[in-house]
Image (cartoon, rainbow, N blue to C red):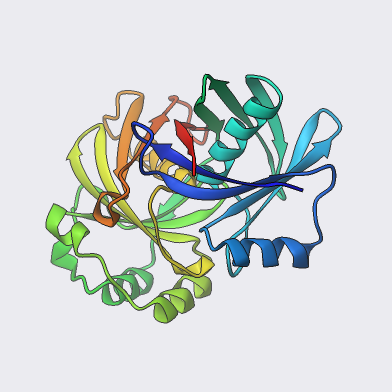
Length: 275
């Protein structure tokens, strides 16, 4: 079994979010997958094996199994294209079935996933207060155009929109306290966003639930956030770009295409590079 190391949502063959990808005839045991993900230390590792005309896929962070991971799915799509052929692959996850389209040619790789269905709901005031305290923020730091909200697309995230790029750049928090808060409320990440314009956003994602302080590119959260924008009739124009990882020195670019139908799958795409 070969463990691939790929970075998704890179730009000009730099940056991106590292992911492990293991494609094998059979999935390793749960304990083996947990250990491999922990030893690798990336925010997520995707494990895939053939299942009929599809691929059975599971995702592990260093400290937990994750129901869906966007950047590892994009990395897997590129790996399947490189090993098999360019095209669309069906992925059977723990709770749903999705697709990923991979393209690999002359060492250049890209992939686009179709997310699980999206949903969003207002965040409870006590959770919002707890998240602000964790991150050293106050209510006046929030952008009132996008209220705090649960958003999901295969995994659940808390969205907090900030009114200042400087406050986004200053994100910091205690990992243990963040882990407790996220696990108590069933969150995979807390996504902080700053609005540059209606179709361009800057983001940072705290991922303490998986034992990682921050993700440099988070495809699952991008899909969830896109669904949230659709739910509130944001003027997204059918497509948004999310810049993430800049404050970590690993700039990543995520493109999300948003159909009109409420709850419909979001297409999340980006470049992939070998590490």
